[in-house]
Length: 234
Picture 1 (tube, one colour):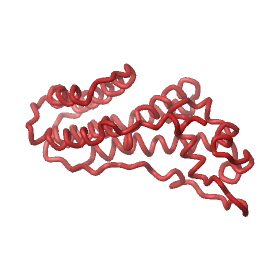
Picture 2 (cartoon, rainbow, N blue to C red):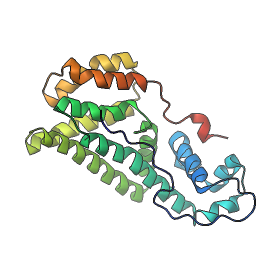
Picture 3 (tube, rainbow, N blue to C red):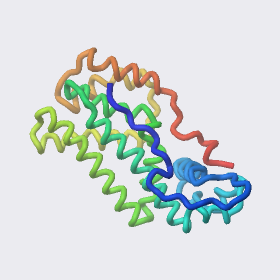
Picture 4 (cartoon, rainbow, N blue to C red):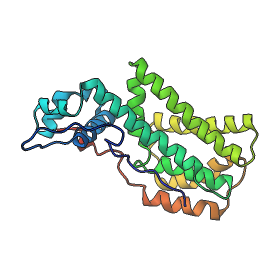
């Protein structure tokens, strides 16, 4: 069974300022959680101090106990996206596996469980990157790290360097394209196609023993929401 990444704590890498005394209604994590949801569901333009404070039911001034300005909040969101989506792919690519098909199935877990890889959040960041050179740089780095992790997976199972690189690109770009097209396939259809995808990616026909753990995992997460839209709205 592959190790699964989980949502990182919103404040894991940022120092906390002491909140003002009195009845504090929103923590730094509250601001980050709501901002991340607003980013994923509505886009970066809706991540504003005023909109978030109204949804949290607190004054705008309380925001500045945790962040210097909106830019600092946006940087924290970028970091959280990277630690969720990119770190999850790396963790799953490095998870123990007896065969290459088992290893790729470990990565497939990211594609069926939005708690460890959020397509909605990933594409919100990709849209944001169209207007921000800073975000574009972070996105390019993330795509590179993800692809390198997948390449290392194939190298681990004896594929030549260039072959591993191309297979990693095909696997990763295919999945990003799947999200870009917003395909709405039932989980049963996806699972029926899984053996064929695996053979295309690895060149090796998978066995039932390699497929069964992933099938069970996929069915268990088939209806997990990728951000509840109500969390990003008033």
